[in-house]
Amino acid sequence: MSSQPEQPSEEQMRAAYEAELSRIASVDLVLQAAASLLNIGAHRLGLTSAAPPAAPPTAEDLEQVRDAVDAVRGLLPVIERSAPAELRPLRDALSQLQMAYSRIAGSAPVAVPPTEGQQAPVSPPAPAPTPGEAAPASSAPEGSTGPGPAESSGRLWVPGR
View 1 (spheres, one colour):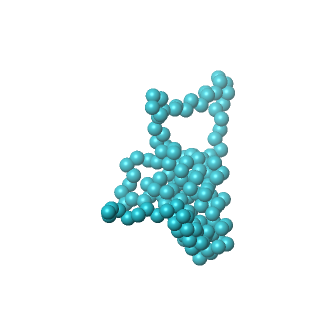
View 2 (spheres, rainbow, N blue to C red):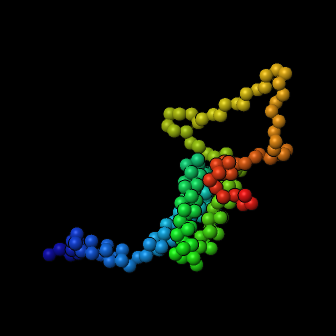
View 3 (cartoon, rainbow, N blue to C red):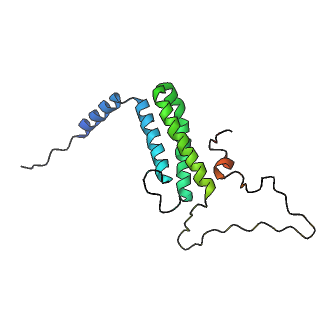
């Protein structure tokens, strides 16, 4: 005789799965997905641990955060309709994640590891003005760096805009 418990049959597994689907409301899954996406974004930006991250987020990390933000923004109308009491904390967390993304993406160069056997890409220098031609004037105030990648992408909410 074996002391191993008997594996459920396919029919038993299907019945258990259907019972679980009957028990769970779709809004519960939407809320769980939104919370998970916010946690993934915070983790990718290094916001989840007490210690500062060892290295700045990579371009892949920032892309993952942007995808998480976009996905949560897409879920907000469903949450607003089906679970309005949960909306405020999720919006607050989303706003904090967006602000952190904007600050991190616009403040420091992103660590982009070169792929194996390749050198890191280098941006070509801006062309120098030809003799007698004035250098293009900048409309940005002195010391301003202009919009960062988050603002210029048009895909991220920016306060006051």
